[in-house]
Amino acid sequence: MTKSYDCIVVGAGISGLSAAYELHRRGASLLVVEADEQPGGSIRSQRTAEGFLLENGPNTVVSSSAPMQQHFEALGIDADLLVADRRGARRFVLLDGQLELLPMSPPTFLRSKVLSTSAKLRLLAEPLLPRGVTPDESVASFITRRLGPEVANHLVDRLYRGCMLVFPTSFPFVRPSPASGRQSTATAALCWACWLPRAKRSSRASRAHAAR
Image (tube, rainbow, N blue to C red):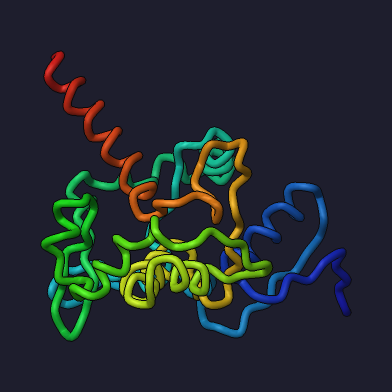
């Protein structure tokens, strides 16, 4: 006997599973179909023989928002969340067979081997570039135009693929509203805008530690 469903979800990746969960929550009868042997799509963990844990897809999620936390609780996985170790703030990229530490501040940026000297000079020259808006611009195009191709390839490409599993060449650059007070295309010194919030947080943390 053929069974009928209100909905059929094709693909059991994160998007398909999220859609299936929401449909199920609303009372719909549904079927999820997946060509692979296991669900999850590109989100997959792998333990190596040496004991290292490799994440083949996105490896982090920002859980500070209340809706996200409520979603975790509704799924019953809030107790299984792994909070990132502070040592994980040291991020590395693989370049030419070597692990290189990602620069997280202006001093480490100057010493970093992730970018060549010419790329560093190109990045520092960003405030001098004319302001402009390019409609329907991708993240890769925006970063390449403002900060140079090495920043786009060595840093931004890995960031987007590691957090969202998307290629910045196909991901649209969404400009924040000027009213939000955040950096936008019309804002100069984009490279420093990325570091200032981190520096302020570090300064506040140092003062709080000293007050204890």
